[in-house]
Structures are given as structure tokens and as C-alpha cells.
Amino acid sequence: DFTQDDISVKGHSIECRINAECPEKNFRPCPGVISVLYTPGGPGIRVDSAVYQGYTITPYYDSMISKLIVYGKDRQEAIMKMKWALSEFIVGGIDTNIDFQLELIKSEGFEKGNYDVGFIEDFLSKIDGAKLRKGPFPHIRIGSGEFTDSLLFDHITEYSSAIVKFFKGRP
Image (cartoon, rainbow, N blue to C red; front, side, top):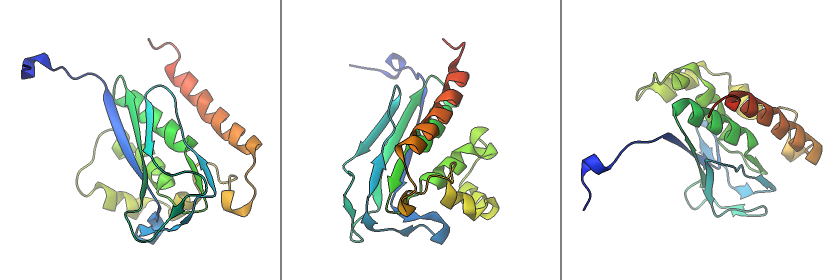
């Protein structure tokens, strides 16, 4: 038998639900075929999903395509891992809420833990809608055919460097 005293809290986790939807159009579902799929991974990063490149998102069911879960030794580390993971997560052929969630997690209010039930509505009223479309690397336009392995490498390398700087000197 376990009691509450046997349980201790260690670390911090964050989950982002990746949906096939268009945030700048009131989160309208976005059915279609996933033409490109690159999911993040690594220590403390987990993706729960059943989609694959070539998978068809139908308009008949929930638009969630995966759950992205990160774990860190504290909230700051978990936020950094989620930024990295969202930046690595690439889904082509359909609209997703990945860029929206990346902008949300990068916001000062979220990082400081200063949010309430009105946070999303307030966030949406302040954000530049173009950021929800372009993402952190506007040169990666998968749907237009301009996506290359070289661009993916540059994209991942830039965020990998940021992660190394973050963890340098930490136990």
C-alpha cells in the first residue's frame, strides 16, 4: 500500500496537442494528406501518434494528430525542451497549430507562469497572425516545394546550438 507521504514530485512536464487546424481561422480543422513528417525526439521528449507521411486527415474525426510531451528537471528546462521539440516538429501538406503553440510557449506570460483562463484569448489579441503561418523559419515552405534536407539540417542545427548553450554547465 502507498500513502501520500510515499509520493514525491520530481521534475516538470508539458504536453502540447498537435492538431490539424488553422489557428488564424478560429482553429478551423484542416483535413488533407500529410506530405512531409518529421517528429522530434531525444531525452525527455516523447511523441504519441499514429500518423505517418502519406496519412490522410479526414474531416470526420477529432483533428488531433499527436501529443508532444516533454520532461525536464524543472519548469525552465521543460519549456526549453518544448521550444526545441516544437521547432523540430514538421508537418507538411496540412495546417497545424505547431507554430501557434511555439509562439505561445515563447510568450513572456507563459514563461513567467502568469496566466489564467483568459490567457489564450488575450494572447490571440496581441499576436501577429503572420507568425502563426511563417513559424520560426519562414524559409521552410514545405507546401511550395522549397523544402530540402539542407534546410532541415540548418533548422535543427540552429536549435541544437541553442539547447547546447542552455544546458552547458548544468548537471
